[in-house]
Length: 235
Image (cartoon, rainbow, N blue to C red):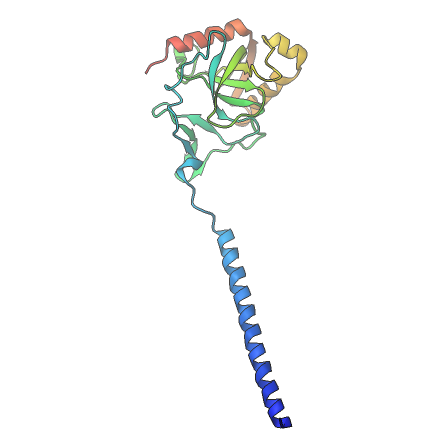
């Protein structure tokens, strides 16, 4: 082969290599752009992201688990700051809406213990309630949102929210490390600070001046509130 032929062949080879290289780089750049665009475009939320419809949590469970324990619907797991609650009309567990496209998130420390409600309860305003199901903290391991679990009531934190009575019952997970606790006094003795932590959280998570804790009641007082709320539940 002549030198001219060799040069022409080398030139064609170089040109082909250059075109392949450019195409390869172009493919890489397009892939990166597409991948980046996908990362920046979150998937639209599904209904399960803000509502749990598996049960009528308000009416579908008895308030009593057995003679000594109550049923508790976990609305907010320990360590969570999304504000969910059982809707009184549907009984579904819903993330509380702030607007048509945003939902309530507590801008404070997350909940220090599992928080929820007792099904088939309602404490009227005239009897010291707020017209809603009984609120309750459950001490123990973190539980999944929407769990319905037994709890043993040991006391109550007497509170007001914007001047209206809004007491919080305190219960323990009977299968956990708090399971042997039977009273607020025993809790304070063996696990000092827990009631103070919950009270401080409740008094501040909405901002200063909204919620105030007035006193702590014993197990008998808490059970009396529970019994009254069961008696006044309306289907």
